[in-house]
Image 1 (spheres, rainbow, N blue to C red):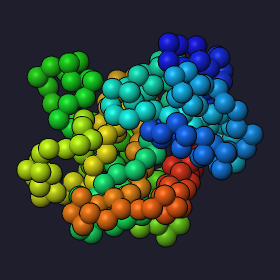
Image 2 (cartoon, rainbow, N blue to C red):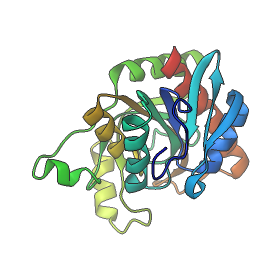
Image 3 (cartoon, rainbow, N blue to C red):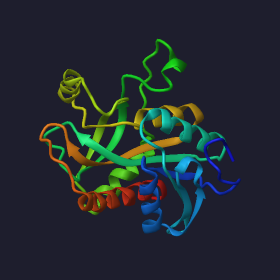
Image 4 (cartoon, helix red, strand yellow):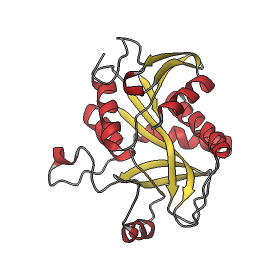
Length: 234
């Protein structure tokens, strides 16, 4: 048990999927896991542990933004022995060839600031995913016929962005999409010797201003969860 996670020793699996929304964690656990058990409710951040094809897995919310994600990722790894952490979440497309419902596998995550910035001081650390997880996620997506994109993403530290010039620069440099957590997840995992990956569903588009309805999001997010699970245990 920690300040933010009320699970008992042994209740957190070595593999943890991390959606931002705790209720999405509940939805994913009930849909994809066998015999899911709620192991955390502290501050309303729900976590569930069950099995997927005989493999123990925890699905635990991270909250919105890198400061919140950093708290849970650090405690899951340091205090509960998590070794593989996969973010499953939504993202906004920044390229015309990236469409709604497509899935993005994030190799790298650029950012202006993370909670770990003070750790590195003047060094610009380049956070990246675990290559083995990337390989398995790509293979799983291709086997499913998923519209898949692999490359760099942008982890923003604000939701209501007032920097159209920055978005234009990121688009020009091939950034696939924007979200709010992956850069810190990759950094924390690297610091503690854990594996990390972000598997993201495109739910809206910064260039076309399209977005998914609630029903469409559920269908697309299900595919993302299955790819993440296959990457972890493939």
